[in-house]
Amino acid sequence: MKLFSASFDLSSVAQQQLFVIHFSDKESSSIAALKASSSVVAQLLNSDAISTKLGNVTPLIGHSDLPAQRISFIGAGNSADFNETAFFKVVASLAGELKSSTVTSAAFTLDDLKPAQRSIEWTAAKASEALLAALYKYDTTKSKKNEPISVTEVALLSSQGDLDSAISTGQAMAKGVNVARELGNLPANICDPDYLAQQARELGQNYSHIDVDILEEEQLLEMGMGAFMAVSQGSDKAGKIIVMKYNGASADEKPHVLVGKGLTFDSGGISIKPAAGMEEMKWDMLGAASVFGAMNTIAELKPKLNIIGVVATAENMVSGGATRPGDVVTCMNGKTVEIINTDAEGRLVLCDTLTYVERFEPASVIDIATLTGAIVVGLGHHATAVYANKDELQAQIVTAGQETWDRGWAMPMWQDYREQLDSPYADLRNVGSRAGGSITAALYLSEFAENYPWAHLDIAGTGWENAKAGATGRPVGMLVQYLLNQQG
Figure (tube, helix red, strand yellow):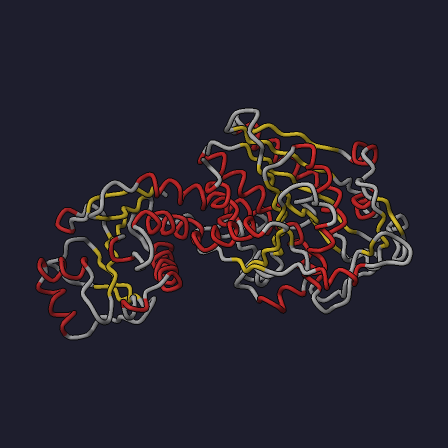
């Protein structure tokens, strides 16, 4: 679907269908223009026949004297309450209408959609992103594929100048979000470590400014990644570390590094998970999926930065070679870990990977992981948990989430919790108690990120919500905005 900016002039709308935003307490610019040019619209509006309830759609059918073949009104509620949440609900209604429409072209006015605290550029970018993301629907492993929608172009009307650059940004964001969702929704028999490695190679082939390197298990063993291998050794499918380097700045500029947890299936290992709902464990690689999504968006936007996307990918399976509870392993940085629970495997693959990325002398490192069920209890599905060893870094990430409405919440890493990780048999154990489980998981990872600014995003609640909805593509927006904000 082609999205483009056009001037706000309802008398010259070339598209077949026009969507009009309708508030309960004031006339939007579109409403005022329609009333001035169409007696039919004026009469209907004066009779209160058109709903202003947030998200409700009222089509005009069988009327002449209209500036477009079809007009549909989308209720926006009270203008004083029209915030970002209301904005996305209206855009979702608009996307739903586009999916079912039989026309080939449509238009809507951006000026009326702008939340009070946001710029017109933000509105154009987020409307474009939300529209294209809403059109995604998984069908890869279905025999019957989704029918393509008939709408091929959408004009975003505004009186405030050319917004094509903002629209392009939104399109790039949507591409990254949908890449992450597609990878997350694939089943584990397709999306395994080899598949993710191939996706990285294809990314490098498609974008000349991205270089890709795949580290195989033999190399991981040579580097002493005992924690990573404690997870991967239980599977017949070999684990990997995938490195994708985007080179957008001078070679001497320190890179920003994204590290994604890529457990393409998590059985829990010897500490096996309950059978009910275990199929959802294909989503234990959504941290990795968000790194792929972010790197796709970065490749499109071409910021003047050096960025490295690193994916730690493996399967956590049960076999005769699987790690046992009580085993002690030596990590790449020399620390020893007593494995109390083999279902706390994400932190094991991540801790060695966090040590590995020291060699890049990073400006910052952010790891992203569906790490703990505890954070779903704490924050639900609305906010990503943001931990960091630097207050400034934590604040920058939370701000990036606010800017993109891919929101996060700053979490504590007080040393009061650290004693839960003490072990009589090793330097630390891989789990604490149930209380504060997401915090102790972050504290565990912090032991391997002491030599650079580091943040940890626990996306167990935001990467996906339920099996029907599937992967959300979060926190691609937060990650990309954080990176864009680092440009000088």
